[in-house]
Amino acid sequence: MLSGRRIVLGVSGGVAAYKAAYLARRLVEVGATVRSVMTESAVHFLGAQTLAAVTGHHPVGGFWDEAEVSPHTDLGQWADAMVIAPATAATMAKLATGLSDNVLIATALATEAPLVVAPAMHTEMWENPATQRNVRTLLDDGVTIVGPLSGALAGGDSGPGRMVEPEDILTALTEVLSGSSTEASVRDMDGYAVLVTAGGTREPIDPVRYIGNRSSGKMGNAIAGEAARRGAQVSLITTAAPPSGAAIEVVRVETAQQMADATWERAGEVDFAVMAAAVADFRPRQAEDIKLRRGDGLPVIDVEPTPDILAGIAAMENRPYLVGFAAETGSMEGALRKATEKGVDLLVGNDVTRAGSGFATDTNEVTVYAPSGESDRWPLLSKREVARRLWDRILEDRKPG
Ligand code: CTP
Image (cartoon, rainbow, N blue to C red; front, side):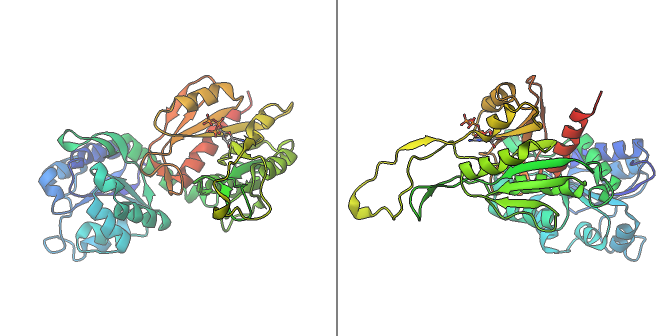
């Protein structure tokens, strides 16, 4: 897929720039033509001569000393895809706002080719709200962000912020080049019926209060939207706003009981059920008809269990292919246990305490478990990309024979 493709490699100034040379070499090895563009600070970390030797072309390093009159538009128009690796916090901020005060950003702005960005920075910088805001903006703009991973960082620190490995970037480039594929052409779910639960349930205490959770419904929306784009007939049972622009049957519910009723009613007729909702495990035994008053003293709220929607489907005779989710905090042992004990075909676990993972974010870092306990950890990806990979994995798993 990368053979014969024209890739612009943008390198910004971080320690991970040393990996950019290896990335360039791998791209050349798989048959791509690579031209590169470096920021001024990148040159402190990686010699321009190194990239020139690996790619066969001198990297562009500025607007003024180049052979081309307009190096950024020249490169931008030439590219089949552009990748920025590593992308520092500053580069991401400039990209998110369109501040093209260096030739790398100007190239990224001047290209209509798909853009892949591989962030690399210290954990504090990655987790900073400004960086996370820029990540969201870039995702909204259609940029593919790969990583960062958690691991050893410069200066002996450890945590999220480590650039993904060059092979992951090759995969991301292959995916963006193979398609616009997800937009229109891949209809590999034609004829399938899919059920997705999404959002967090609300269990009423009184007319104004409820027991709830932080789920935003974004992961379930991405899964439902992706299945619809790929041709499936989709029912989304959700407590949250559904995705826009997708042909989906949406059933809005509020409580676990309503979600259970709507889900069980449809589960016998679908091929796949993906339980992405965060369902309350208990609810007030009795919801008060009128508001509890402060003056009446501290209430005691007696709770009872809610129906286990997933267990209901797992116990069905002709059950659909069943995917469970597990939102864990800290250790992932609970996810492994759920994968082996809940009667699912696949379980998607994530640690909601990690930056960029879990509730209300646009990204997620998940580990996918088979019932055998075998697991596959994916890097931090947009929820859309997680949804895409999840359907790829489910369809692969489901293949007859
Ligand atoms: N689930 C469900 N109905 C419930 C509770 C959970 O269908 N009443 C589904 C969720 O949608 C998810 C999976 O079950 O796909 C696991 O949910 P989770 O809350 O992580 O599991 P629990 O068994 O409640 O485990 P724990 O409370 O120990 O984390």
